[in-house]
Length: 334
Image 1 (cartoon, one colour):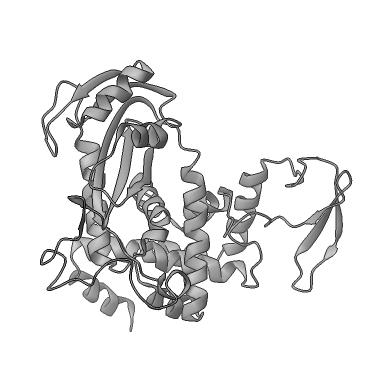
Image 2 (cartoon, rainbow, N blue to C red):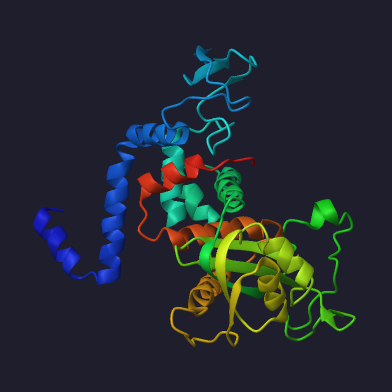
């Protein structure tokens, strides 16, 4: 295909397809320079000061190489050995950084595990572990989020999923609830008039774009005062104003922390000057959209997927370089 034929093909693409093509070309170009991307990630993580990840000492010396060529380091104080990938998504993996970069490209396009595995050239099982190492790093970073200024709070419910729990938690292959009859709406599972197969997600966002999403409670459709304080207490230290729906527990929360409080009807688009809950409602719509597309997400991994959704919303103008450098900074414990 010559240049003129390529131009003719481009004329048939709409704007969305052109945007995707431009993004693909940019990622392809960055992929050819993956060594520079990895060096930028390491430099950003250690900020020109290489320290021991165990005792934080700066008395470090080189200590040979592993079989794959990775440089080993030795701490002169605690005598521990480590590499520059310690505590990152590349820790304890035999896959080269190039495969991880390819995986990030396809994962950023919101593809499923099988498509990611095919594109990166790995098995389905390996694709699962790669995805969850990345999600684990994002989830750990979510624990350090701090919201400031005007903060919008709201909660939402999703159906609980026991996917992946049957063998380990239920040796007899029995679910901890009765089977559904003609779908979830056909038969409601209740315990003392409270729906027990729902998961409550707590959400918060400030005007700087910082997003906090966490699973707050399982087995209920509403949050109590104690749960709200436990979930939001650590992220509201620098907040000044709360914008919420009419749930009474938010009034108690604002009084306890001495914050100005504006209450709006649930799912309302009402504005009072600069105060509204439109941003958190938009985030909820993105969560619902993601859950509709990716069915079968286990509730035990829901926190990790919420972190991914928060990351994609906050970093809309992202590319492969930014994705890898950012995620490389996050601590990974998976």
